[in-house]
Image 1 (spheres, helix red, strand yellow):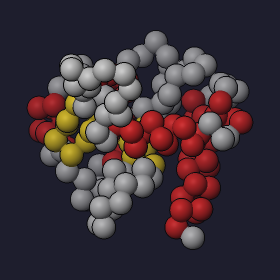
Image 2 (cartoon, helix red, strand yellow):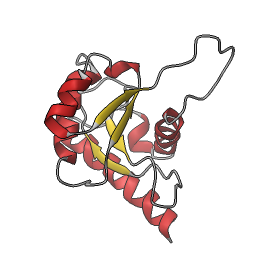
Image 3 (cartoon, helix red, strand yellow):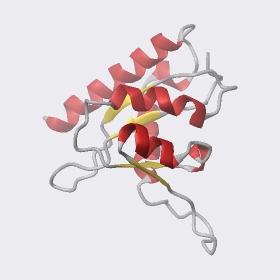
Length: 142
């Protein structure tokens, strides 16, 4: 199980054909808090294999630096781009592409079952995340 407050590794769509950034959920894996995100990344990427033919680039934060980008390219033919903050930035500066994920995690705050770690099984946590995203997606497309 994951510890309270540890976000699961998720994969979100970053853009649509008309360049709008929607942040729809593509895949989610909940893993133990003592496991690094880069260790759980292959299971997230396997969920995407064959389901998202237009996927070319995966933007990730520094937690995924342990994941070899060359391996992602050889196995999946996707480019792994690590988004890092600029060194001369002062104060809060939203990182490019990273704000989409943070915004989606913020949306999860509106769902009581996702605020705390109520679930005993990781599969149930994944199901609750999917249910929350279904509700969000329905509100966005209607």
